[in-house]
Image (cartoon, rainbow, N blue to C red; front, side, top):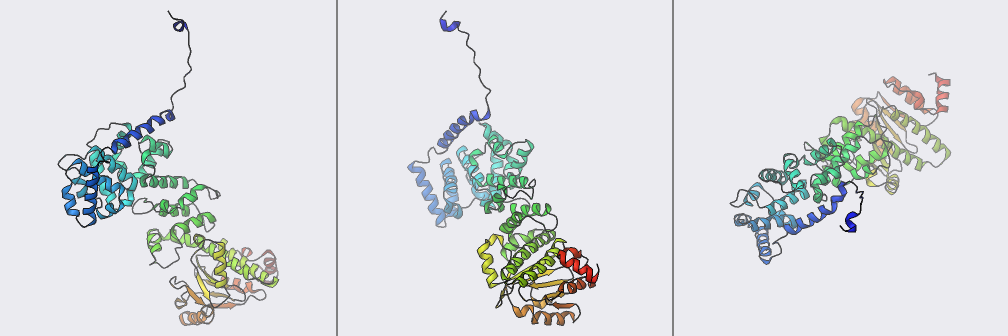
Length: 487
């Protein structure tokens, strides 16, 4: 017996873990790519591809379809769909063209099938209606196959779920059911090689939605918000004809009470869908807001009233030149913020002077700004607030406060197709239009002199608006109001 044979050697081997097999998987994937490309570099295959491309680009689609008879022909079609966008556009995926790939056989070749899987997971909803045709075709083809690898086995088992428009959503829900991270579940399903494709990107978008539901308004630096603001994320399909962006807006609205919405959530909504207070015929309104319930639109309009007021007060602050201007600014600020904080403001519209417009565009990006109109030929900015039956017009500088029981139709103040207004629209024309439509009762124009807030509060009380006066007056003004007029 050798000396080595008499040695008592002890080994402490660790348990195998998932990552120990990653190298094997990479090698297997490399061999798979080599196998898929077999025969595709030959001169004959290139000639077939060139001939098919020429037919498709010169109107010979019908002739091309009849020429697909062999496995090589089918592989050439799939290869062109995968690697030539012009061919895909000229000869798009249809049920008839997919069926022709089989020729006279009962099923498509393995190499063509692998290529079609790549096409589906890479392009997914970008294929348009063809996505559903290709998905159903793959369901049928995979039902005839026996899996030769774990990855394909999982895809075959889940074919009825994966190859539908809701496939990405199912993937996320299945990962959640198994308490697995989405990336780990994607690998388990054998879909890792398609991670850069549209299907997995849409799945990630759904995954972000599940995280958004648990997000706190106080989390201002969460990278999730940045991800959801990306166009390819919020334009991904959700369900029932809606997009991920529609669901993002719904979730955020459900998580907010009143108008006290975090600014980063407000910016996200504007980045996705823009301002709902725009012409209903505009493309953005038709794509986003028309598909959401009225209560969602109303809630976001309320949010944006707070943003309107914030920007108006910035414009007001910029125009204040003296200490008296600053005092008047603070009084107007307290009144309007008090109305907003009591959830009395139902709608609003902002009208900025040219100077204020230039200032806003220097300070904010387009996605941070709501829709607003321009006040032409004037250095004054204005804001309209709707309190239900009471309508308010407030302005900067020496503009008077206007209170009305109705908003004249001819004023056009809430006609969002009208983008430009003059100072006359807020002065002589507004009063004239009000008198013509409602008579002389219920119209109040009050300059900001003396204790002007008393007339405003009397007007609110006279017309049935209940509010907490302490919230619309500064502490010193409220104290004076109680001393002079009682509570």
